[in-house]
Length: 239
View 1: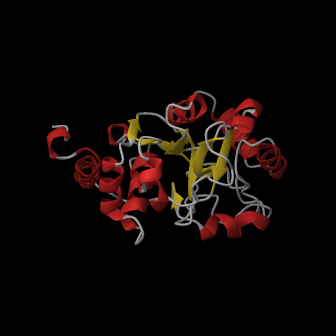
View 2: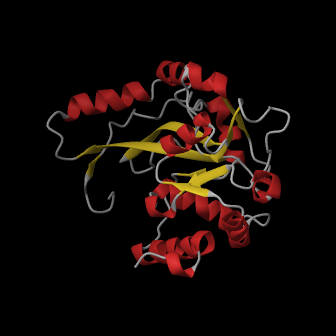
């Protein structure tokens, strides 16, 4: 989209605050990362104690978690889901064989991240791999644990359509999102991981989704089919 001229440039100051991580702003000035979230293992505290909660994705394929785990469905192959499964495929401790073991362990595949939370909250599948809810009620009922293999970080970029009817207001909004005070507020209220400079190291230690990756539609489709096959078998691969 950037190369096709869809986006307008941000104002030069946007995202260049010394208080923010240096990679927050696109070097060419077309977008900026304004929010970040992590993808832990989420579990229902009504069904699973903090002490017994799994601390690795590999553990989810063990017999004790059979019929108790939910994962995002390959049918919902957004860039986020694509990134999560590429993380699995590239992990020495996981790979496609882990997806096959999850299939044998009766994993439930759900289309959207909110459905993963609902499954955990209701106890239908007390363990899921998804973004934790930030609501107080959910925080008391759901636990979240970093996986030993790594806690994938998702970055959300904000850009301005070059045909926006009010470009000045749009640029002011992006500048407000990137203001250190706004970033501090979002972190304090559970809306985002901190993008402030002092917290950059944590984000850089983990696998990151959202950074520019050039993958052709054909490559994405081929990878999706491999994930489908591992999770559901040959007879369930969509045409």
